[in-house]
Length: 393
Figure (cartoon, rainbow, N blue to C red):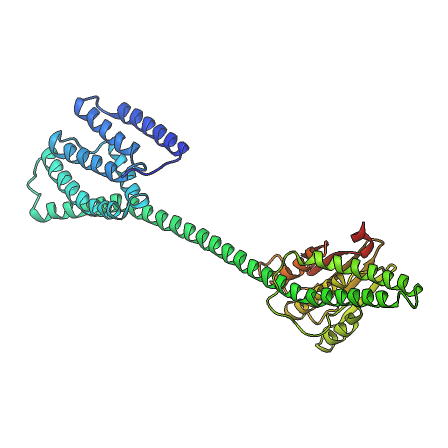
């Protein structure tokens, strides 16, 4: 029956009711009946949002008493009824809303009857007052009352519909955001599983080298002790790389294993040729002196470049060249891929592809970072991959 209101809404309703009571009291005749009517209608005005059904009931009590108990003509205090009718459609439940509409019709009918007979009583019937004149007068008053009472109810219904539509849009946006978050989590999990499959071959190869070198050193120790140093050096180098690769797994479960060698930086040229054969113009540039990258880091760079160029084919302007820049430093490799957008990022039509989630995951698992954002009419993907020296540090 009672709705929950915020503190500022309660304060506003109390202030409006107080001002309304003062105005009604000043403009009234000061009689006891008028004062009682004003108190009841002010109470209805005060409760119009907190309890629309109760406010409607108080309005009916006041209206019936005004017409048939104190026989008082329309006064300023009656304007509270309009606010109550508005509240029944704007804030009331389903029953209260339709009771408000029924009150519009019934109230207009009773009010028209009251006004018709009141005018006849005040001015007296004249010789020219025929039944047709009285009926016509009653009809015009009924139409006026229907408009007067029905307009606030209609406005309240429109406000209610607008609020419901806004809440529906907000709920739809929240549901869409939750769905996109869930989809992103699925994509990230799938990408992690794919990374685990890729890294399985890397780690397995490194451990096989370590085992082979260890066995060879053990057998060759008696005949060629100098060969042991070379074997131990190879074991140390391979073990460091394998340890870095194992850290990349992050406890990922391996569901299936992909056969064949994993791509590295040396395979990038073949990838670029494939992309160019698909109709994409690529301008590649290398700056700085290249340094050592672990097997897993090379794989991450390859996958990031592959996904970024694939996104250019799908969503970019292939008539414009894509620019790929490798910037080597002592501790990092910065990979930047810039392409031209088909649409302006300010039109709302640009949507980031789900492949970016996989690229970010690739970069994060090797200790790096990745950003992807529109700049004017271009889309720039920048990955920062740590080199082997930075990893050991």
